[in-house]
Length: 412
Image (cartoon, rainbow, N blue to C red; front, side):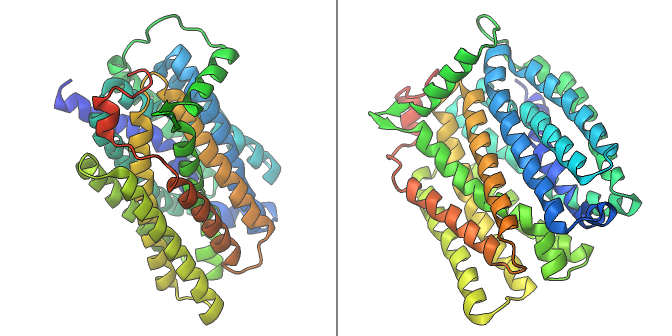
């Protein structure tokens, strides 16, 4: 594959993975407007964020095994078409309940299509090369959380419907680009194309039960990722309230508060593509987990003993927190996907399903215990961080070199 074709492949796949955060973040600036139009509280509209997480988690759970059994391309096509239809449904909603319903369907369709992106990278490249390419896809994807809030902020002045008109166009454009630049490069699926529930369950079992040196690997790595993702999703669920209500920031302040942590994740992703093969990834996970928890705990203690931190201090603390979160995320992904090849769709499904489900549960929990302070958000983030950290320290030692050189990958 030429360098130009490789760049096109990675760029379109980044756009496909970005459909999730793009759909989420472009929507966030419109939450107060939607709350006003439907006559409900911001906390009630925040539940549509959790509804979206639920849809994405189910979609990715179904999409991965489908891509393993029927093929990556057809799964992406079905998902993107359904995404467009669900987005149109939101445009014609006349109650917050209908918005929640179609947000679930929108998330389901987006998750169903996007789950094939990383497995396509793993289908084409071997573990060590895939470990370099995947962060590039995810780094490019991070343009979405940086640009989507800005786009949403501009569009919401024309009414919240304009945000979803834009997302409908985005879905159709992505479908066309995938057909032109990615589909011809996707390896043809070997063997029969047959979708079965038993095959899906068997693939999930193989992922969860995958062992190296008689030690359970797949399940532990996925659990670390799920709770680590819960830290981020708890923040996303509460970000509109945190910056616009609690800190009374205008649109510019909201964008700064959101873009600064996201930019830090982008930087970590780019660095991971350069240095992932030079680091002991497991030790990197341990260091990142400890620092992430320390930052959350420090911000919580400040709130307890010194009252409300400044807006700048909160943004700085969250930025450092998500930098450490990204360190853990990238290192964990490199090892997890390195352990699989033919089952990467199922791996991605379980990884994403548990992550988004955890995000939906934790995000909903903060809405239910909402008390107009930062404590529900911080306590929930701290809980998720502790669980993720404790599991990570029980992971058996493994490196990408071990996986590739000793042929330890399932389906290598």
